[in-house]
Amino acid sequence: MEAAVAILCQDERVFESMIQAGTPCPIDGKIGKEAKALWSKYDHERPDYDTYVKRMKERKEKEEKIAEEAALAEKKRIEEEIKMTEELEKIDKEQAVEDLKNLKKVR
Image 1 (cartoon, helix red, strand yellow):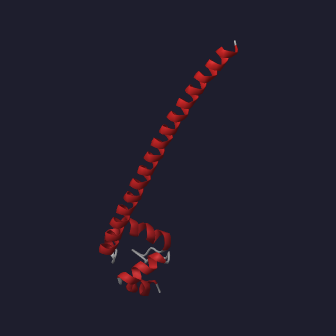
Image 2 (cartoon, rainbow, N blue to C red; image 1 turned 45 degrees about the horizontal axis):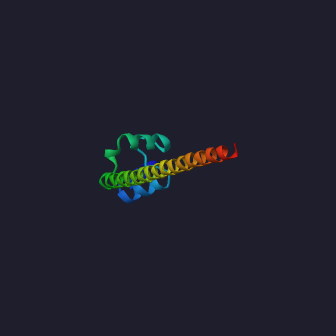
Image 3 (cartoon, rainbow, N blue to C red; image 1 turned 180 degrees about the horizontal axis):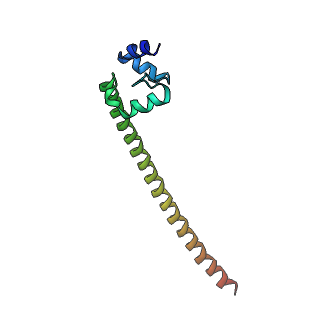
């Protein structure tokens, strides 16, 4: 049975389908988790290597874009937080001055 699956796995579509199903194709007589580890180690031996490399490159670019957007959003959030803190500190100082004036009037 494993030999038949190994032959079928030479087709890129079958190989990818097996990976997507969570049952990687056999490699060097290994199946299951051991096969998955070997395919990760020797990914250049995959029948769908060119497609795989292209997909990984696209994913990396997408992840970098997402990380960049998250960093920009965080930077904006921090800038807004700093601005808000400065405004609140200004209000606190003005209130303190006002309280001193009122205290002087009372005396």
